[in-house]
Length: 282
Image (cartoon, rainbow, N blue to C red; front, top):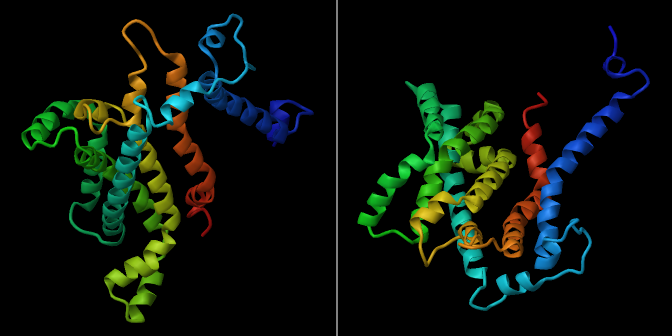
């Protein structure tokens, strides 16, 4: 049987081909991000220059405006997004962890069908729920509050988080829990002292995904908030005016929105790697 490298091209190592493909994908993924960051520090004249200029004298005026304390500051929007995303992550992880543990460890009637039905709720386009939710929350006088976005985001993310967490609980041997039970641990002690620490990579990975999804969400934040609880993605949309697009402001806010994902990915990458490789070795 011929090797893969021979099938690709004689004399070209497989590792070189793989590295080349990875580099192409890396450039394809990073180039838009780098261009947005460069646009955020360009003046309007440099942004519209032909041919496009890559290296220019940096202009941080937009950052000073949005990260300052003036009337146009984006700090209140950033705080709203951080608080809502953090609370959504906290509630989602707690509820989905307990639900995933129940689906993983207990067998009851219609459990598999219920799990599939839970995931099927994600097949429904979220925009179809806007009108009934808007009417309900208007009746309850909860519009333009952090509470309404936290509840909606948590309800939307629980099915995805439950499925993700169940896969990690399935990879934890039940013998460890049985041994803890023989040592005198009750059900809650087994969950919080044995199972949850072992599932920490899965909890970390789930938390990252849920936080980023809640941080980037735009539609519900745009529909259910008006003045007090606008989030940073909604503020980003406001850079598109009636007569023009404020490209430097848009790029600056887009860079600010990307920062949490970049920071979390950098500092939590070991948990993501452990989450990806969990269960690969038996």
